[in-house]
Length: 473
Image (cartoon, rainbow, N blue to C red; front, side, top):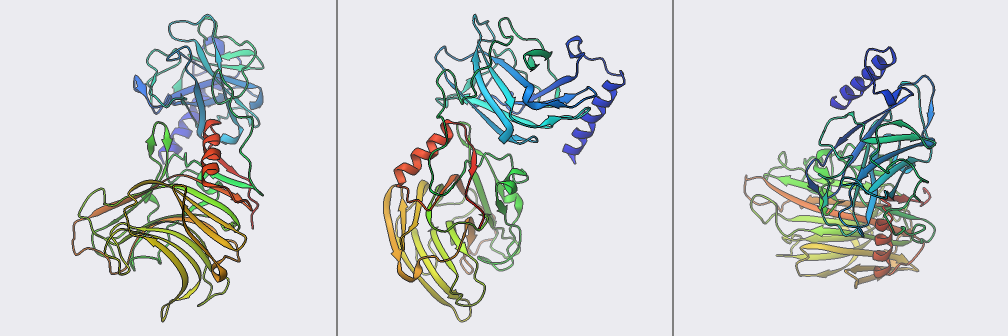
């Protein structure tokens, strides 16, 4: 409701401007106005977060490809490199570009600029672009000093801002540039300055999926457009009657400016007071390499410890009937407090052929290790040539095959759930968390764990937050 009010307010301002009831700056006599706010208003920050909203006050549409927005800042050192990222944009981050340029000679508040451009789209007469949630950060991941930056402002609500400029095909439409800040030829669209980013994405087999989980919150519409689903329906696994609230999924910053997918599950020892969490990708995966960086935890963030909780990364095909021959599943499952007859920490790698619920019959093979896996771990699953290989932190953990090799396309899932009958006898609420830094898949290609990390680092160096070139099944 709040976001709708903001849109209505913005539209009202545009309408008033058109009939002359709002005075516009002299240099906005053409058609474009820029509004700015920031979600990082401190003198220093993990990243600068300039958010923009473009407004077309004219009577004709404007091709976005002809517009450039420049945000001016003072580099923290002469040799410092920066990286650009688009977290969310109504016009789609896939159409937004970012490049860095130098101002020479510089001033006390500006010797660099971030130039934001567009590859497609149009801004209709009287329309506004809506949120463009942008950010840039130091390549060494140290904090950014922004209190001395020419374009920096502390407003956390959108307002006209003339210290950011807008150009159309090189002509100034809005704002006032610092000395030396008017356009020379535009910089190349790279992730940093002065050195360029990699020229293209890392290789893949027959397509890749990479997600850095740089979403705003569980309501970010990019989640669904990137083929993920946040589960909200009731049912197994776990505590009968437990709920799966959408709000238990979030995307906190976990290091520097890097975000992660976070699953939260809570319980007070009762079915009605138990919430579980799950995020799943569409079914289109079979052979190839799957990988994720996952943070497991040995204890709740609050409340008493000891519940039998399962922290997971897995692939699965639905069970359509008891002992369905087309069912398959490959699991990384960590039980920090034990469960299923185990008294303490245990990590399972389990490959399934099928199962039956009543009476219970499991057709699977598993490998286990009874140690703590508290903290971050790189998990790699290779499915190829009749073999299923599980790696943890680069070391081979398990090899399965034979009838347990999958035959039909699967989804990719992360979930955090409590084992039925394994809750503590305590009414004190407790909260458990699991985090996922990134997910990577290469279809029909066996990728070594070290090469997976190289490819993920290449995407991040290029400020590539999401890729999906795997065909739908």
